[in-house]
Image (tube, rainbow, N blue to C red; front, top):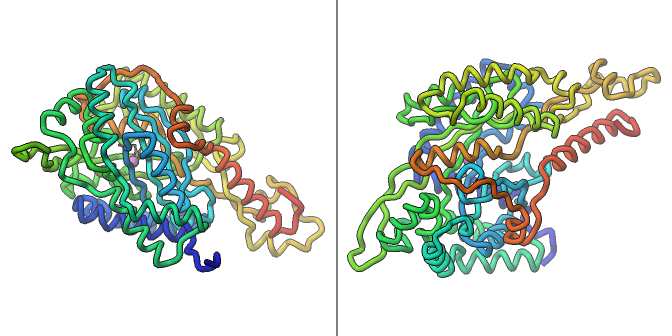
Length: 464
Ligand code: OOG
Ligand code: NI
């Protein structure tokens, strides 16, 4: 089949993301309520803060805002992880970053599958935070064997999905009809199944070890556990949630409120109680809390220097708090966070000059008009000063381990704090994945470089 019959992976991802949102709206009606709140607040911000709208117009994020969402799944075996990577590859999604959650008492390690090029991200920024259960961290050998046995039996991909993945790998793409079928088949892997793969008694054993283990092992597939829209004002969301009947978690994860947001701020609402049909003669029913809601606000991607400053300030805040942020100390945490982060400049020009964030650069009308002038500025700083080049922060496309741990924890409930020490094992994760994860910082640096190069070309300069 000629290559021009193939649908682009970006378009398959956009279709899949839309289908996923539709499915989740049906499965979790509160998600629909949340989407309505987010869209209401985004409209308000765009109306009331023209500078925010202007910045998003420069970067093209205005167009992707409404379809922006990330999901999360947890898989049980290396084989499941490797196959999910092949499934995501059909949609142009690659594993980026390694996240160790064991140090936060959650027996998983994770990556984020997403598009890596800014043009692809512009078409669909859909991402999936994907965690692999680490049974090796479970010290009870009988339980480990039980979990392994159950996981070995299940098949989380449909035959149709597997065939289309192979076909895509063999031919180099899918045509429109096959892409449509692929989206439908792939969706099955992420559905909620109310029939458990275990008896009520086994569920209880798994659950007693760690709620997360029950969530991964006791079901037929890695149900998507949340789908997160992007807001332009997470403080307004946090305040607005209770009025819509959605109780938020105690604190917003990530950096404090700023005029120029950095990285990622997230909040979530507690998981729903869902009925489960357990295996066994009497077909007993029970309940499980799996799926929850989350909302996020995205800001500038930070350089290694900026990230180090962020980590230092976050650690200092937590040390000053003297514990984990929760309901009881939420107000104090908020004020400590704001105080501590006063050390992080809240000004794009300063962030740029100090090398704290990555940026995108644009040739302005003025710059283009001055192309023929012999005396025009030629260095980046001079071009910016002269108004020939405009810059905006490059948006953060990834996740934050401390925030992710907070999100996991608020969902697993405060009763499930376990101790696994710090057990990062990127090599084992990559061995399971059967490929390496990409370095997100390199991706941001490349994207920034491409924007500088495009800018130089438009201005008729050799390089910038
Ligand atoms: C994933 C939690 C992490 C985020 O946005 O940081 C996450 C999970 O609960 O499976 O989604
Ligand atoms: Ni999330």
